[in-house]
Length: 269
Image (cartoon, rainbow, N blue to C red; front, side, top):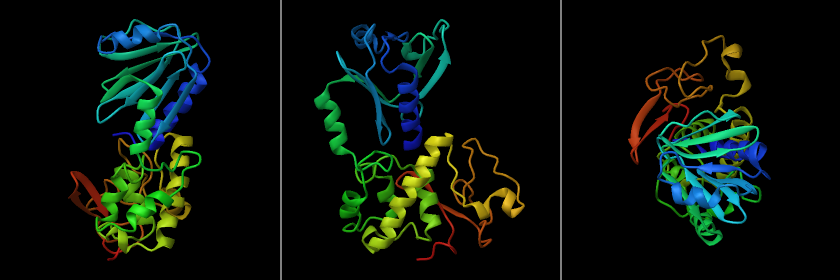
Protein backbone atom coordinates (compact mmCIF):
# COMPACT_ATOMS: atom_id res chain seq x y z
CA UNK A 1 0.00 0.00 0.00
CA UNK A 2 1.40 3.45 -0.87
CA UNK A 3 2.57 5.44 2.13
CA UNK A 4 1.70 9.04 2.85
CA UNK A 5 4.53 10.61 0.88
CA UNK A 6 3.18 9.02 -2.32
CA UNK A 7 -0.30 10.47 -1.77
CA UNK A 8 1.08 13.94 -1.05
CA UNK A 9 3.17 13.68 -4.21
CA UNK A 10 0.02 12.77 -6.16
CA UNK A 11 -1.74 15.82 -4.73
CA UNK A 12 1.15 18.04 -5.85
CA UNK A 13 1.06 16.47 -9.32
CA UNK A 14 -2.68 17.05 -9.66
CA UNK A 15 -2.29 20.69 -8.65
CA UNK A 16 0.53 21.22 -11.12
CA UNK A 17 -1.29 19.54 -14.01
CA UNK A 18 -4.96 20.34 -13.49
CA UNK A 19 -5.68 23.03 -10.87
CA UNK A 20 -7.78 25.84 -12.30
CA UNK A 21 -8.58 23.91 -15.47
CA UNK A 22 -11.95 22.74 -16.76
CA UNK A 23 -11.55 18.97 -17.14
CA UNK A 24 -13.16 16.16 -19.03
CA UNK A 25 -14.09 13.55 -16.44
CA UNK A 26 -15.18 10.01 -17.29
CA UNK A 27 -15.39 6.51 -15.85
CA UNK A 28 -14.58 3.99 -18.60
CA UNK A 29 -15.11 1.13 -16.14
CA UNK A 30 -18.54 2.50 -15.28
CA UNK A 31 -18.33 2.23 -11.47
CA UNK A 32 -17.93 6.01 -11.06
CA UNK A 33 -20.10 6.93 -14.04
CA UNK A 34 -22.84 8.95 -12.33
CA UNK A 35 -20.39 11.05 -10.33
CA UNK A 36 -18.14 11.51 -13.36
CA UNK A 37 -21.10 12.92 -15.29
CA UNK A 38 -21.62 15.54 -12.56
CA UNK A 39 -17.91 16.48 -12.61
CA UNK A 40 -17.42 16.55 -16.37
CA UNK A 41 -16.41 20.02 -17.62
CA UNK A 42 -16.08 21.31 -14.06
CA UNK A 43 -12.98 23.19 -12.84
CA UNK A 44 -10.60 21.40 -10.46
CA UNK A 45 -10.04 23.90 -7.67
CA UNK A 46 -7.88 21.97 -5.19
CA UNK A 47 -5.96 18.78 -4.50
CA UNK A 48 -4.77 17.74 -1.05
CA UNK A 49 -3.78 14.73 0.99
CA UNK A 50 -4.20 13.55 4.55
CA UNK A 51 -2.33 10.38 5.36
CA UNK A 52 -3.20 7.84 2.68
CA UNK A 53 -6.30 9.75 1.50
CA UNK A 54 -6.33 11.94 -1.62
CA UNK A 55 -8.95 14.66 -2.12
CA UNK A 56 -9.57 16.35 -5.48
CA UNK A 57 -11.73 19.44 -5.17
CA UNK A 58 -14.34 20.69 -7.61
CA UNK A 59 -15.87 23.71 -5.91
CA UNK A 60 -19.13 23.55 -7.83
CA UNK A 61 -19.74 19.86 -7.08
CA UNK A 62 -17.71 18.44 -4.17
CA UNK A 63 -14.60 16.34 -3.59
CA UNK A 64 -13.38 13.17 -5.20
CA UNK A 65 -12.09 11.02 -2.34
CA UNK A 66 -9.51 8.43 -3.37
CA UNK A 67 -7.87 5.73 -1.26
CA UNK A 68 -5.62 3.51 -3.35
CA UNK A 69 -5.57 0.61 -0.91
CA UNK A 70 -3.40 -2.38 -1.77
CA UNK A 71 -4.08 -2.53 -5.50
CA UNK A 72 -4.92 0.99 -6.65
CA UNK A 73 -2.77 2.77 -9.22
CA UNK A 74 -2.87 6.38 -10.37
CA UNK A 75 -0.80 7.35 -13.40
CA UNK A 76 -0.34 10.39 -15.62
CA UNK A 77 0.30 10.89 -19.32
CA UNK A 78 0.62 13.69 -21.84
CA UNK A 79 -2.36 14.90 -23.86
CA UNK A 80 -3.94 13.90 -26.10
CA UNK A 81 -5.12 10.98 -24.00
CA UNK A 82 -5.28 7.61 -25.77
CA UNK A 83 -8.46 5.53 -25.67
CA UNK A 84 -8.82 4.32 -22.06
CA UNK A 85 -8.71 0.71 -20.93
CA UNK A 86 -11.96 -0.62 -19.51
CA UNK A 87 -10.23 -1.05 -16.11
CA UNK A 88 -9.96 2.74 -15.61
CA UNK A 89 -12.25 3.78 -12.75
CA UNK A 90 -11.68 7.52 -13.25
CA UNK A 91 -10.08 9.52 -16.04
CA UNK A 92 -9.28 13.22 -15.77
CA UNK A 93 -8.29 14.84 -19.04
CA UNK A 94 -6.97 18.38 -19.48
CA UNK A 95 -5.32 20.38 -22.22
CA UNK A 96 -1.80 19.15 -21.44
CA UNK A 97 -2.18 15.91 -19.48
CA UNK A 98 -4.50 13.16 -18.33
CA UNK A 99 -4.69 10.94 -15.24
CA UNK A 100 -6.05 7.39 -15.00
CA UNK A 101 -7.12 5.75 -11.73
CA UNK A 102 -7.34 1.96 -11.57
CA UNK A 103 -8.33 -0.44 -8.81
CA UNK A 104 -8.73 1.90 -5.81
CA UNK A 105 -10.29 0.80 -2.57
CA UNK A 106 -12.26 4.06 -2.57
CA UNK A 107 -13.29 6.46 -5.32
CA UNK A 108 -16.29 8.50 -4.24
CA UNK A 109 -17.79 11.95 -4.70
CA UNK A 110 -18.27 13.45 -1.25
CA UNK A 111 -19.43 16.69 0.36
CA UNK A 112 -17.42 19.12 2.48
CA UNK A 113 -18.98 17.64 5.61
CA UNK A 114 -18.12 14.09 4.59
CA UNK A 115 -14.55 15.16 3.84
CA UNK A 116 -14.26 16.80 7.27
CA UNK A 117 -15.49 13.60 8.92
CA UNK A 118 -12.57 11.73 7.31
CA UNK A 119 -10.10 14.32 8.60
CA UNK A 120 -11.62 14.09 12.07
CA UNK A 121 -11.04 10.34 12.35
CA UNK A 122 -7.42 10.51 11.14
CA UNK A 123 -4.42 11.31 13.28
CA UNK A 124 -1.98 14.15 12.57
CA UNK A 125 0.02 13.83 9.35
CA UNK A 126 3.76 14.66 9.39
CA UNK A 127 3.34 16.19 5.94
CA UNK A 128 0.34 18.43 6.60
CA UNK A 129 1.01 22.07 7.40
CA UNK A 130 -0.08 22.86 10.93
CA UNK A 131 -0.05 19.26 12.17
CA UNK A 132 2.31 18.31 14.96
CA UNK A 133 2.93 15.28 17.15
CA UNK A 134 1.10 16.57 20.22
CA UNK A 135 -2.23 14.83 19.63
CA UNK A 136 -0.49 11.60 18.69
CA UNK A 137 1.68 11.77 21.82
CA UNK A 138 -1.42 12.08 23.99
CA UNK A 139 -2.54 8.67 22.73
CA UNK A 140 0.86 7.00 22.47
CA UNK A 141 1.95 7.98 25.98
CA UNK A 142 -1.08 6.28 27.56
CA UNK A 143 -1.07 3.11 25.48
CA UNK A 144 0.06 -0.41 26.37
CA UNK A 145 0.09 -1.22 22.63
CA UNK A 146 3.50 -1.65 21.01
CA UNK A 147 4.98 1.45 19.42
CA UNK A 148 5.26 -0.49 16.14
CA UNK A 149 1.51 -1.06 16.07
CA UNK A 150 0.73 2.51 17.13
CA UNK A 151 2.79 3.96 14.29
CA UNK A 152 0.66 1.99 11.81
CA UNK A 153 -2.63 3.07 13.37
CA UNK A 154 -3.95 5.82 11.09
CA UNK A 155 -6.10 7.17 13.92
CA UNK A 156 -2.90 7.86 15.87
CA UNK A 157 -0.65 9.14 13.09
CA UNK A 158 -1.70 9.37 9.45
CA UNK A 159 0.44 8.37 6.50
CA UNK A 160 3.04 6.13 8.12
CA UNK A 161 3.21 2.67 6.57
CA UNK A 162 5.33 -0.41 7.00
CA UNK A 163 8.53 1.07 5.57
CA UNK A 164 8.60 4.31 7.54
CA UNK A 165 7.50 2.43 10.68
CA UNK A 166 10.39 -0.03 10.52
CA UNK A 167 12.98 2.52 9.50
CA UNK A 168 12.22 5.29 11.97
CA UNK A 169 12.30 2.84 14.89
CA UNK A 170 15.67 1.54 13.72
CA UNK A 171 17.07 5.05 13.29
CA UNK A 172 16.22 5.79 16.93
CA UNK A 173 17.26 2.42 18.36
CA UNK A 174 13.78 1.63 19.68
CA UNK A 175 12.56 -1.93 20.17
CA UNK A 176 9.35 -2.18 18.10
CA UNK A 177 7.65 -4.16 20.87
CA UNK A 178 8.12 -1.46 23.49
CA UNK A 179 4.70 -0.21 24.64
CA UNK A 180 3.81 3.32 23.65
CA UNK A 181 3.73 4.44 27.28
CA UNK A 182 7.32 3.22 27.58
CA UNK A 183 8.56 5.98 25.26
CA UNK A 184 9.91 9.18 26.72
CA UNK A 185 8.65 12.51 25.41
CA UNK A 186 12.13 13.20 24.04
CA UNK A 187 12.06 9.94 22.08
CA UNK A 188 8.62 10.68 20.67
CA UNK A 189 9.56 14.21 19.62
CA UNK A 190 12.62 12.81 17.84
CA UNK A 191 10.51 10.18 16.04
CA UNK A 192 8.00 12.80 14.89
CA UNK A 193 10.71 15.22 13.68
CA UNK A 194 12.46 12.40 11.82
CA UNK A 195 9.22 11.31 10.12
CA UNK A 196 8.61 14.90 8.99
CA UNK A 197 12.06 15.07 7.40
CA UNK A 198 12.08 11.56 5.91
CA UNK A 199 8.61 11.88 4.43
CA UNK A 200 9.37 15.31 2.97
CA UNK A 201 12.34 13.75 1.24
CA UNK A 202 10.03 10.97 0.06
CA UNK A 203 7.74 13.53 -1.58
CA UNK A 204 10.70 15.33 -3.13
CA UNK A 205 12.32 12.23 -4.63
CA UNK A 206 9.22 10.02 -4.98
CA UNK A 207 10.93 7.13 -3.17
CA UNK A 208 11.83 6.16 0.37
CA UNK A 209 15.47 6.56 1.41
CA UNK A 210 16.23 6.29 5.12
CA UNK A 211 19.96 5.61 5.47
CA UNK A 212 22.16 8.41 6.72
CA UNK A 213 24.95 9.72 4.44
CA UNK A 214 27.61 7.67 6.22
CA UNK A 215 25.66 4.46 5.53
CA UNK A 216 24.99 4.81 1.80
CA UNK A 217 26.42 2.15 -0.53
CA UNK A 218 29.06 4.61 -1.72
CA UNK A 219 30.15 5.51 1.82
CA UNK A 220 30.26 1.90 3.00
CA UNK A 221 31.53 0.28 -0.20
CA UNK A 222 28.57 -2.10 -0.33
CA UNK A 223 26.25 -3.02 -3.23
CA UNK A 224 23.13 -0.87 -3.60
CA UNK A 225 19.78 -2.29 -2.65
CA UNK A 226 17.95 -4.24 -5.33
CA UNK A 227 14.22 -4.19 -4.55
CA UNK A 228 11.00 -3.24 -6.32
CA UNK A 229 10.32 -0.69 -3.59
CA UNK A 230 13.59 1.12 -4.36
CA UNK A 231 15.44 3.34 -1.93
CA UNK A 232 18.16 2.59 0.59
CA UNK A 233 16.90 1.26 3.92
CA UNK A 234 18.27 -0.24 7.13
CA UNK A 235 15.87 -3.09 7.92
CA UNK A 236 12.74 -3.09 5.76
CA UNK A 237 12.54 -6.31 3.70
CA UNK A 238 16.09 -7.20 4.76
CA UNK A 239 15.13 -10.20 6.91
CA UNK A 240 18.05 -12.56 7.65
CA UNK A 241 20.58 -10.17 6.09
CA UNK A 242 23.30 -8.54 8.21
CA UNK A 243 22.60 -5.16 9.77
CA UNK A 244 24.52 -2.37 8.04
CA UNK A 245 25.62 -1.02 11.43
CA UNK A 246 26.37 -3.97 13.71
CA UNK A 247 26.27 -7.02 11.44
CA UNK A 248 23.54 -8.81 13.44
CA UNK A 249 20.87 -10.69 11.50
CA UNK A 250 17.79 -8.63 10.75
CA UNK A 251 14.67 -10.25 12.16
CA UNK A 252 11.11 -10.35 10.91
CA UNK A 253 7.80 -11.24 12.54
CA UNK A 254 4.09 -10.76 11.98
CA UNK A 255 2.53 -7.86 13.83
CA UNK A 256 -1.07 -6.83 13.22
CA UNK A 257 -1.11 -8.71 9.90
CA UNK A 258 1.95 -6.86 8.59
CA UNK A 259 5.59 -7.90 8.45
CA UNK A 260 7.77 -6.23 11.05
CA UNK A 261 11.54 -5.83 10.53
CA UNK A 262 14.12 -4.86 13.15
CA UNK A 263 17.68 -5.38 14.36
CA UNK A 264 17.75 -7.10 17.76
CA UNK A 265 21.18 -5.62 18.53
CA UNK A 266 20.64 -1.98 17.51
CA UNK A 267 17.08 -1.93 18.85
CA UNK A 268 17.44 -3.41 22.30
CA UNK A 269 14.54 -3.78 24.70
